[in-house]
Image 1: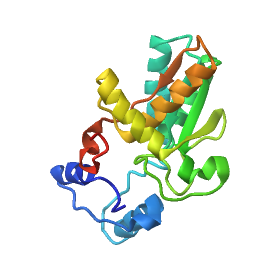
Image 2: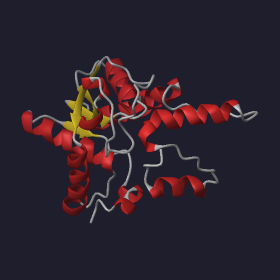
Image 3: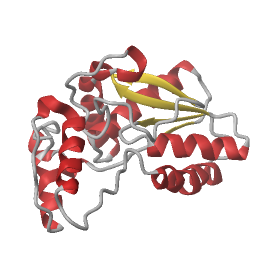
Image 4: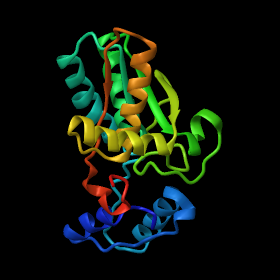
Length: 208
């Protein structure tokens, strides 16, 4: 979508990609539809399909989820926003495999609460909150919650200034919800997934 940060576009150009922008009003679905159209019209092309490719879930089931359990076996909560659904679903399955009782919390933007409220819309948390439910998102054993876009941005800024963690907006979202859960359950061990750094969002002026 043309609403994505300039840095995201610049990174892809650096790898040699030709950028095709779609109207932001169409959300991520508009970009997926356009990618599928390009694939149909381009001989010998493929789409990695991160929203539906089961390898996405497998990577986090055998990687991220096991890593969390290895480092923090008695974890109580894991919080992650969902974009493709692969991270949160893979972690949930890894915990299920290990017999862990930890709760896995999937977070979406309050302004585009498609799973929790049945309505999608524009929001400020790039990387999560697509305007469709991805095939890689498992509804069980995952629980769902929301965070406001402004709260996610405020937390990303706070993380940089108070903790020296230069994180992205979706990371701010995850940290905000993790802190909320920790406050509601004193003594619990809560993991927040930090999927990317703040370098992709400098041009948006959110750290000023």
